[in-house]
Image 1 (cartoon, rainbow, N blue to C red):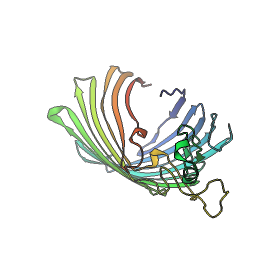
Image 2 (spheres, rainbow, N blue to C red):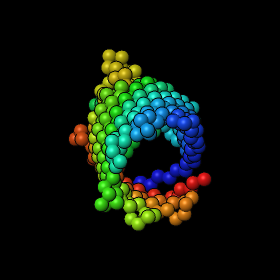
Image 3 (cartoon, rainbow, N blue to C red):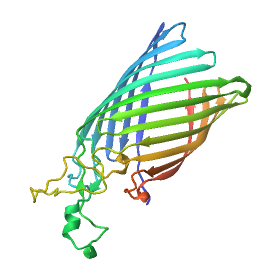
Length: 303
């Protein structure tokens, strides 16, 4: 199956320096055929200990508008739904030596509003039990829109260590992130990368990333109950979802990127990344989980 979409996105930020104090306001915009988002953020950083220590505080807010314009499960076409998300961030960067940097931060996220996926539908056992399997049209089963909770709180803890290795003219970076949210999902991410300098102008960076998460409390491949309300003695659960992204899963990402400084004001970038996702519940179909090869090329300009 092939999917096509067009999107437009942009970010604008500037850092204002007042001695050891640094303020960075940021504004962002993202538009797709069924989605519109505006964002604002402000980060404050304070240099301490001869700039060997930097404390950071940040806040961001996203105003998202969901505009589904295809057939959905129970949601009227083009019905506008909105979502708001706030992130609060606190962190510290510590220089442990001339070639070693430690970074630790914590983020709290609060999202509320329309948190569902309008294009996902769920199958209920009440229909399967009422129809002879011999007469089921598995390509045209009645599905019901997913009601996720309208509020989600998430907590993220992150730590990374970067070490430059002088004889190899390169540096290693390792990081670990733990997260937990009110959906009942806890996740772990480990990432390792190497940044190799070749000559004065080229940098090559192979990387490996592993992610593993538990399932949301309300995830399942099908559910008991009568979502139509016709049988009040057999009510459905309050929330339900068959979105594979909320199942227990693990992902592997690996590849490499390269950057060349072609001028003082310009560098060229290229990268390749292999992405693989696998289910861990042994119930969700393995064919549900995607894999991809991602190629990226670009340029960066400095003014």
